[in-house]
Amino acid sequence: MRWKIVIPLVAAAGVASLIAGGVYHHSATTNAREAATQPSSRSQAVETPTSAGVFTMHEQPKQVPELQFVDGEGRAMGLDAFRGKTVLLNIWATWCIPCREEMPSLDRLQAQLGGPDFEVVPLSIDREGLPAVEAFYHELGLEALGIYVDKSASAAYRLGTVGIPTTLLVNAAGLEQGRLIGPAEWDSEDMISLLRRELQSINTASNR
Image (cartoon, rainbow, N blue to C red):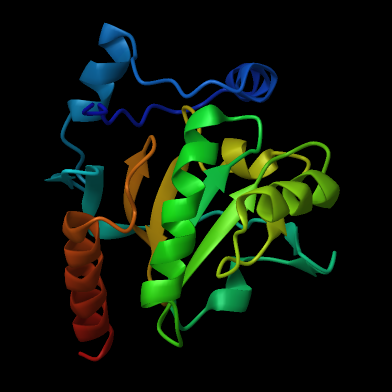
């Protein structure tokens, strides 16, 4: 199934319904679609389709708001902890069925590409916090991924998500390079090739 990309602004009420419903929104109103396709003087987006989903890559990287969450040990941290490496930031929750289905492929992606220059950061917005996420990791046997939790779910609002899962590609300078809304086969051949190309492009740009 192909998922449509829409990036409207999210209101606080929208986040509340997202948390309560646990359903990925793969459709939008006509107005939202039109707003998402309007040209911007600051940045234009290029949709990059793969067999696993559609990544919207920005011609100009975008600022990422400050996020606060905890790691698997309960220690407070933010995205600045990953500064210097490219991050695939995945916003998800254990009650979100598409999120649950894609997590094993994210685990395999981290095992394959994770290292000094790249890391998958799955940020849970579960209100039940670490216990719910730890139990889910144990249930699925996830081993390569770290645990990160924002039980306030403020990250979903601050990032302007319209549903989960939503995944951001954040470059080594902490800027949003691209975004994919909806689930994906993260360790598919197409996706691996796309991410390798983007990593190479990001590294080339940072060395100029």
